[in-house]
Image (cartoon, rainbow, N blue to C red; front, top):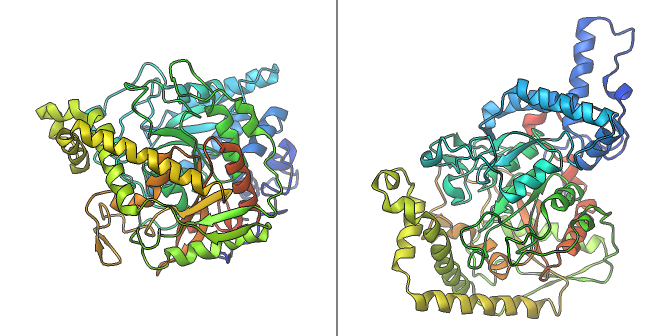
Length: 530
């Protein structure tokens, strides 16, 4: 895959992937560099190296005490100060003084041999949909503008217990509805590759913060592609785990809410797997949570895939309206699977795209509408809701029990349709979106290839099949296409509970696609480039 900007390779040039950093290597200025200009340049290079490190390497460096939490924090805060005003990825920022004090406490613990976990000293901004103790958690709505929780959600508490230092939140659409990150509280988050276009969503702030090296790892959540679409649009990785892998706690409906799940985002698959090892694990409050040992995800991901099979689903035989260039870009990316010895064939689901869409809309109304119903019934709060939220609630109010039951049965048939394909294929692949990133001032695409879009998320229906089937799905970069050469991704879908194999094949795909690592946004010139 050709590089978009033809940047120099990062391997072996003082960047992660080909070296070991030490305090002396990164920070010590030689005695001859007494001039202030030379010292400033050295410090800038040190900061650049730190924000550009892979998370796995960063964790190892902190544990060896080759680098300090204060140095890591200072470097990332400087990166945020430089880029966030333009891209608006991180919101509700915590005081830098408070963060540096927390980082200093991490260093004091490290000096005594006490490490809080694998994320010890990591600067981290939590997706704004996740309740986070002591930090405004708005879900992008003015209704919750002043909401400061007194407790963390489960996934947030796990990241905190692993040593992450929370620096703020990442921006989202209102109530995470839609795959375009904008709201009336914080405004628009702009794409890392082109600030004139959408960052995707609802984990758009996380994706942009990662792509622009504002933090080493990311968390997000996914209902209809919220971990996958922004990953594909920002040339990073986003993983929707099997349902139950990362329990949703607290939840008002632990039995009926089986669409939404939290998950990790990262610039490399091995980093993403490290974050999943923190997020995953059973919890007695979540009856469908999976109890497998999360440490399995932190192990090496290398595996031989020669002779295994990939099923390419494309646009489901024309069932998904797709912008010109998306399928072509994704099809070219499939060559990476062939490069590692896999066979790639066209595959076909036995359920039509039309039936899947009807099923998804009904179940989404039922789930989302019930969650937002109380806001809708309060006239003052309803006046603050965006049209997308109102559409979901009003759809919910029109549903009958029979419609919900029939949709649940159709969802069961979809799961069986996937299961049948997995008897032939090891993995299935779809595009991560039906369009390239669209203009940032557009609320959502009204048509694709001449076909009208009848809802705010119709243009993202390509993500809904694996969601409804509850399958582990990894979004990986596919390349750059369309008239403006913008990023798009692939969804790699695995069988039920095959989270580790999906990460392993994603790791192999990444290694066979070196253009992913060497392609960087223009905004990183002079910061994260080699």
